Length: 63
Image 1 (tube, rainbow, N blue to C red):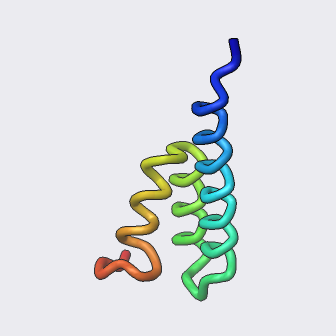
Image 2: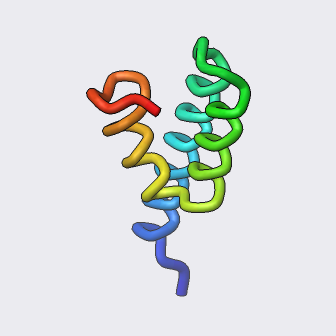
């Protein structure tokens, strides 16, 4: 049987990852920082998204 709950969660995470990547690309950060954030979001979708939300553009910590 199909697990629609898991599929929905996966689609939501995918949509949020795409949204985060677009914001990274539009940011005024250096190219290297952008590449690192995008790799983190792509390779670790949920953890990368959470880290970007906490440490990224509105977070208190900057790289």
